[in-house]
Image 1 (cartoon, rainbow, N blue to C red):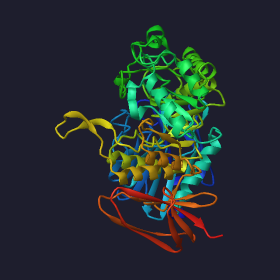
Image 2 (cartoon, rainbow, N blue to C red):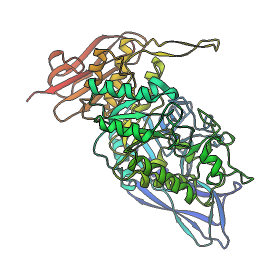
Image 3 (cartoon, rainbow, N blue to C red):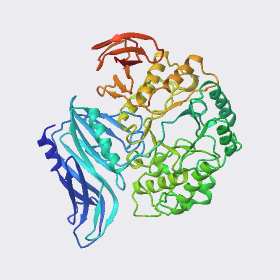
Image 4 (cartoon, helix red, strand yellow):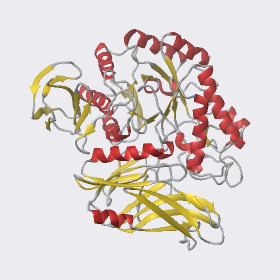
Length: 594
């Protein structure tokens, strides 16, 4: 990237589009650059108020054609994009536009909050928002033209009024990882990460039992973990314990007393962790029936069903969306989390379906609040209830609006025991490795090591049950992914029946220092985890065929297999692994010469 190209983008035109789509003749955008970063203000220089549809910070022609490679974030945690400007592709399974029904601008592909453009393997341009306090940032790409936009959401700006906008960075460099690290530091200056004493480890009920989980399932696994892997500190009770979506303090038929259960977990030396979806409720819930006025409203001032504006929900939908601007709804959130913390003894909360607290559309108690403001107001109440000593994990959340509101963030979709999903989660998670330890603690989702009876869908659409068929190599690929993520380690298998060899793998995964791998390039074949006394080489064969993998060691030393401890001798220079099976991975520990 040349200086002239940077200056070209910085000098691109700005404008304000009023509600209705016309360019405003009364409003302007003032930019102030400090090196590679910029701050902006929206100024109404007219004599009348204006209603703002969107604020275009930059727009016009640019030097990037359709064959330019890029990575772009989605608004949702579940949405990520790659490919080229001319042929963008989803990395995950869920699209902001098709799944969540977010609006799109014709003629452009829209990513949210940041993109990394790579016209050459060692030539990168990062454009991104370093704050998200009020407005959602969109970066719209097309061959030869672009727009960088903030969603105005019909913001009313009075005559003579000046509004502070989100901050922005334009970074260039040859080292992809260094560029992302630099970007993370700029974000953290605006949204300091919430401190936590360590990276949580534990066990999750969802991938064994799903919503059919029972109290006995929890006790059985608690006792098995206590005997076999006591290093798994948190016992995460996932979706299925509650009577209804929204009634989080009321147990369902398979649970008797949540306070008693959580206290029993603590009595056995572990910590209870609980799944909560704070921004949703199903129609049958007491929350919805007794307080319909706490929810986002439609044009007739009735509670707005989520399927009218977005995806309706994966269980017991359509969901209704709690209004984060409503003072009584916020009091309710404080009460729920304070009860779980003070009475149940929970200090770890997996927050799911957070997207439904930050969707566009509907009417809120504070009508001038943007979706980002409404969501952050709700999250502030959650934090107040949970207390400063708790750990909040965001899941199915809006990415940038969550900055500074959660301690941890799921960075992938859900794991399932299928090879394409193993590969997909690794691609999703590795694309976000740079966020770990900088924006939050990354959650790569659960470590699963054993086949299980699962739902299968035949080519003709027939749904049946059958045993999953993950191979030993594929399980080791997945285990290597968890290590290379540097993030949380939560077991997702039934610990009562786990084999001794797999128990040893779980224990070994818990011995890392929770440092995310830096990858040599975006093929994610060679990752290096730099621990104080060793380097872990995480080597992946994503292919359908046997493959050789050659890497350049950046130091000389003694190698051993991370999982087995097998000594592999002294190495320096180049290392070649021959005959790596398809869908396999190796983790090697390199101990440098003293």
